[in-house]
View 1 (tube, rainbow, N blue to C red):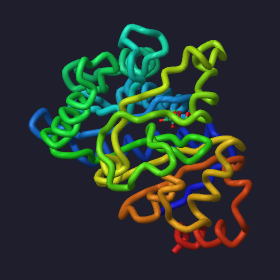
View 2 (view 1 turned 180 degrees about the horizontal axis):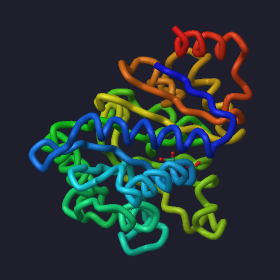
View 3 (view 1 turned 180 degrees about the vertical axis):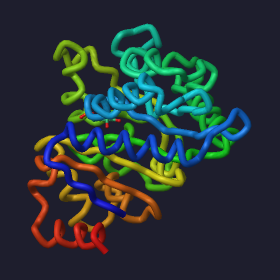
View 4 (view 1 turned 90 degrees about the horizontal axis):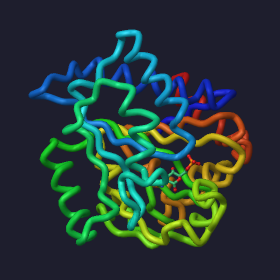
Length: 261
Ligand code: GLP
């Protein structure tokens, strides 16, 4: 895997947007051969989304032949709800670009049969030919999508019980009222993410520093879902300097050697 460290989150988010854009452009997507992109929510990807929107607006990037699959959604929250990931994606990204509505896939948090919804989501990804590039963020405890620590690396899209810590951290999106945060979510599995040809994970800010350290310096383990990146053939962790402040100088030197070789 690659580790890219930029001084600020602004620089890191823009770097990620340029990497995504160059992959889409190089693929030359058409309606018969669309580019399949996995996407996250959270505060971390906002800079990247803003930069991708800019590229669309200045005519250098089109999403017309891009199919998207979002990582996760809260269980029991309707797409119209402002706290839903449906709402988030439309508000911060989809309504600003030329993506076709039928190409957007987000798990339905109101599904009457959530397990079936997860099964169908995996099938939809397969029918699309698999994911070319999965973009993601990371939780303070190292979770990716909503795969909490100890979720099997071989997991597929499933219903996930959220850890107390995740509920506490995500309360900021629910007026800081923990009782309003759903306790379950629908999420792609870890293997759904690692099946992608390319995975890019963003980690910004000092609160992510421990997860980044554990992922890169401890053994690869389901204790830290982010550590699975080290087994992927084409994975990049893009950090700002704050998110790497717990890394040893040896770790930083090792990854910078890989970049410069
Ligand atoms: C949630 C999402 C994750 C996201 C994480 C970090 O738990 N399910 O996909 O990576 O939050 O969010 P933020 O980017 O706001 O720190």
